[in-house]
Amino acid sequence: MTLIERRALVAVVDLDWDDVVNRLSGTAFLVSGKQADQDPYAALFGTVKSKDARQMGPAKAATFGKYTVARGEGLAHPELEALLDELKTLSDELIEADTSRDEADIELAMFRQTNKELARAIEQEVAETEIAILTAAKGRR
Image 1 (tube, rainbow, N blue to C red):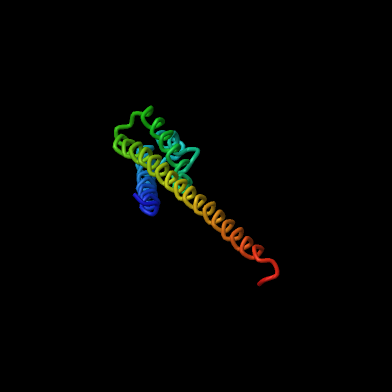
Image 2 (image 1 turned 90 degrees about the vertical axis):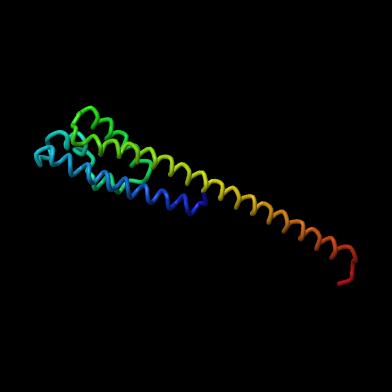
């Protein structure tokens, strides 16, 4: 998979993750009787709101997702089980996609660094050759 494809995969999984967090937040709010200070909403989104979670980068989002799933499983609300399972799956996929993208970024950076080193070595060889030619016949230009 190319770097561009890996970046696109992170974006797609992140959008899916955002969607499930939004749906989980709404469902938890309804199950809580539309009371933000009641469980399960308070336990899941009392400190970090859905809107804020959806602004997180992939690493933080996946960590928040795993934390939220653990909290949600402890509450044992059947209305939330499917969404929590989906969030767990997407959090794992987000970590995998983000790691894959980072590996591709590192490979590209290493390739570019190798090219820079090679270009520098070639420039040095050319410079040494030109100087050797210019200094070989003194007084002639």
